[in-house]
Image (cartoon, rainbow, N blue to C red; front, side, top):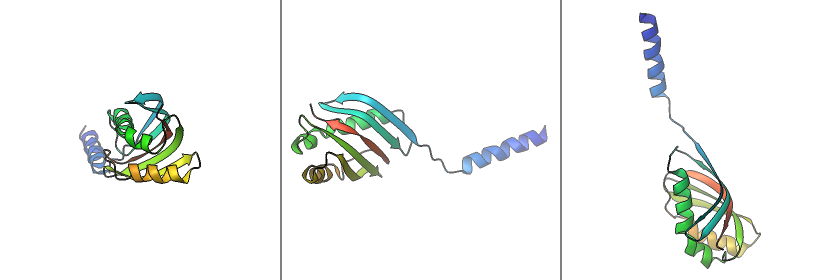
Length: 127
């Protein structure tokens, strides 16, 4: 009996001392938030959160003006963006091949606030 308690205590200590690295994958097939449509959205968040999908769609909706001013009204773009410590630090336009659109989205989304760290890829449009 004492041996079982010792193993249990050792297991708990090892569990508590190991670094936590809970990555949460979110897949959203189709959504429309505040006039921004996203489809086939795939995100990896560095910390698991039950609010993860809400956080990602809210980020897209809050950037509707950026998407419109960059020319996505009535068009769709495939984007990849990443953020670290609460700010977007990487934006990549995967399609269409349009350097003006890419530069505009990069300028408009870089530095935008978003909780935690992670990466998303998906199709975004403003119908």
